[in-house]
Amino acid sequence: MMDFSYARPADLAAAGAALAAGGMALGGGTGLLDLAKLGVARPVAVVDLTRLPGLDAIQVSETEARIGALVKMSRLAAHPAMRAALPAVGQALLASASPQIRNMATIGGNLLQRTRCAYFRDAAVGSCNRRNPGSGCAAVGGVTRGHALLGVSPHCIATHPGDLAVALVAFDAVVETWSPNGQRLLSVHDFFLLPGATPGQEFALAPGEIVTGLRIPLAPVARQARYVKLRDRASYEFAAASLAAGMSLGVDGRIADLRLALGGVATIPWRARSVEAALIGEHPTPAAIAAAAALAMREAEPQPDNRHKLALVPALIERTLTDMVGEPA
Image (cartoon, rainbow, N blue to C red):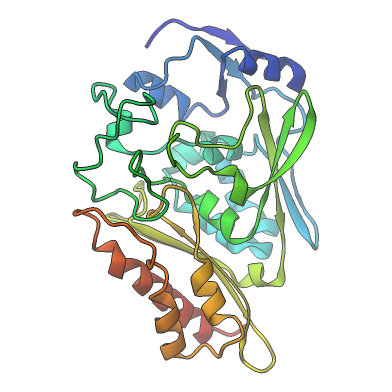
């Protein structure tokens, strides 16, 4: 690791100025310190945000949950009102990392985590457009079992690693930010950027702009939501494929509302809108669910090593929705 300066600003204005000047934000430290040890992150200045006031609250009303960026993952996962109002969030958090990391990591930091692509995390590999813009993508033509099939570009096929973000995308969360221009409310669908030709620009944040929290609308469908994660081992592993799902039925037995988002298969948390559109208003019969689930990977661009996900994802959707239909409301 290289030498760096350290600052602990007392307010958002000072923190924003330090970040705009080139500092790197420190929350729980579970992401930044890891990347610094690998030589991927090379901070000249570290800006400790943990003492900023008012960013560690959890508020749950009948219609909305508001979560401060400095709330720890483990605390949010255990929060009784959140577990009742939106169980998929707690399930996603508990499927993430290890207990030790969840006790340290913040919600804001989790939202901003970087990809686990091995080519990005190996500083000895020169060609990674996220780490070294314009150098190329060593993953293309490399070992790609864990890489993305959706939202890819010739410049990057790195998979988004998060679990929480998948649930946030399924239920239309809003990201709160602060900058010298004031507060901004940004749909989570616009917060994560597709790689396109500029993979190094991963989040829709301006220099010095700070994520201060989340707002999640608590639609009725959220109470029946769940998060299902398929992985190579039972703990401390990133998703081979994951699904945040919420479904509600009308009095006629047809699907009135459906929310589906995928993890482990795309460059950003991926909303499965084609599957939703095919099922809303329909009776959730096995045939209808299977036909809709098959649409999930219609736009996929697989690599030689990850073609198994073309069948894995529809099977995950089909099994999860079938289980949900069979459960009492």
